[in-house]
Length: 452
Image (tube, rainbow, N blue to C red; front, side, top):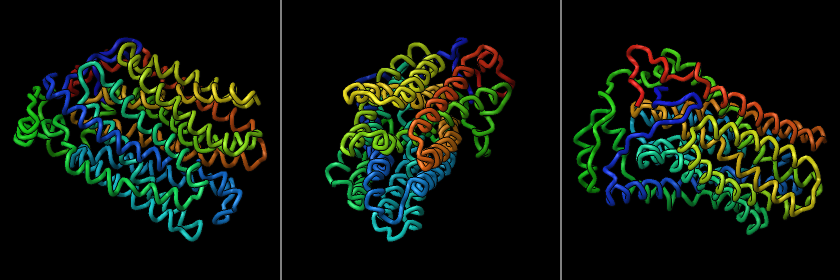
């Protein structure tokens, strides 16, 4: 990925702003962030609701599901996310951020309706796979969109603010499960709501990315959009690249950049293994550890509440100190927190540990996205974010399956240990991205845009 100027620790230089920094420009940015936040809220609800209803599905033997089969279903969903993320990043660099966001939201909403109507585990699994396509497509496109409207020097904070919606969706999923008494069909019907609220609102009010339009040489459209909202356009970072649709992907591997690209992908693998594996199995693992069903669902609410605070703090610190440093610290504390949960503690202390584990867990992964977005050019940003998310989805596929296999053995502590090791794995590779020998600003090959 083409880089901003960085130091040896990977500290990003301030990014260029889309607008003019005026009140109108700020209002436009808030409009984009607000609409994307709403859609990502629904994304988080749909992702976390599955884990919230699993304990009740096990008790009622709904669709003949058990921990082993549930792990497989979770992996089908995250495999769909993998395909969605890899596809959406490149597609959004072709056709635009807005169209990709709308299509992804419509797909996971319709697939949720199919999930709610499923009469067999096979149909349920297929529906979750389709849901994953939409969920995986929305997040990188929304991250790319808000990063391109972010004020100067606040890109990580804005991405972190957007990702609070994902954790708010997780909190909402817990309350939905409690409100419906874990009636899984009703829960998934509620996940159809964005089709009737989020999609119409975004279709009417969400503007296309000005940076995308400029990068594609669509200056008249960019000018008309800027005039409509009363903002000034900044000069594009480079000349529009036409013809080669795969050029943005090739940019990630030019010169020495392929090493850092690979390390970000591996760190994302470990991070998403935790996000999708640990968060899905947390209620069940805590139930097996001796906590009651209400407390187990409560842990889902608390870990996501911690995630919201972590996003805001992590985003601010990443803008100041750089992604490599903050992500490394965040994953280290994630590993410690997860391992600590393998020990039975007083309920109040357990809630505290769960809160701080969520604080570091979710924002560690989000800051990988923010750092990659900041280091990418306007032409390749969607592809870079989409592929770091998509390659990380291999971890998201593996995590739910791994949790199911470990729980099926009857060992409760093994799951906590395995997920803690995944945190260490992510820590190692995100730390390597900050080494000077892999700093792409130090050696930029001929033909690659110079760092900003």
